[in-house]
Length: 217
Image 1 (tube, rainbow, N blue to C red):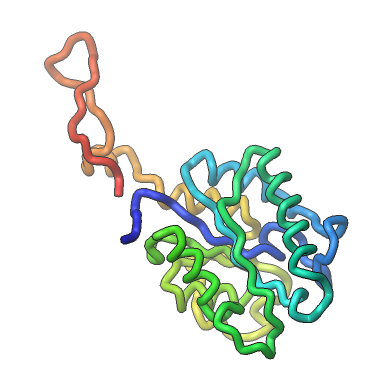
Image 2: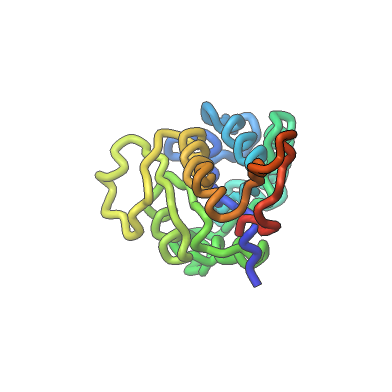
């Protein structure tokens, strides 16, 4: 059963969290560079109750460019730097297969996203996938998630997007602000749904009287 009170966001790694290496892969930590605004975005997600989950194709493992253990070492350092900056990443899911392996987890196949969703008992329609490629958008559409595209140069010259993104943003920080803003109800909406306390008209002391004990779904 899904828990609709928890908030999740799925993030691609290369091109969203860290800078892509032209015609190459991040095979050592010294090549890993956080993109501007990423650490602030991950902190914003944490402060607003979101759990960020990374879902990333890493065919460099399947191609023999680095081992699974070396990839995990890079990941541990990434998680440490995020935590030191006040953010958090709940879990990281990688597809290590090469394109010719015909697996179900390599995006645009939705397997990696569905695994993350299932393990966290989340509801796909309430989740945003933030990616920078056509395969990210298609995987999100196949998994039933909403999507945000971090646009990079000449993106639309590469092909037609199979799963049109909800929005196009310039970076992860813009995506985080948009997601938080869209998922946060206005004052009138919150009062209408009984999510906020209100001042009792008959109480000159201004004590709070709770309109409902319901919590937001």
